[in-house]
Length: 131
Image (cartoon, rainbow, N blue to C red; front, side, top):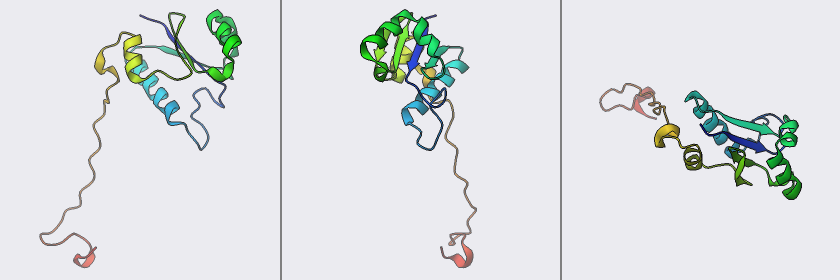
């Protein structure tokens, strides 16, 4: 299996999903990684704040940051080669880069049905027949 790693900028927590203003892209990435993990696919994720030694010890990432600076993160590597820089992979790119089956990131849950209040014929169900 291919070895994918995502090197992220410094964030307040490991996933960046804290505080009041959650970045939808970080939420998407967390959901994708959780789905992949549930399917047995591991993608390592490193935050500059929480795992600085990963950035120092990885020669490819260390050299990249020395040239482009930490503001150029996130960076995604596959088998220790940079494949995406400055953004996160799309869902399609995860599938292609990891050689995964097409439907692996498809929505697994069916949408919940809204509760329906029983109605009497000719009546909306509200008190007095009016809403």
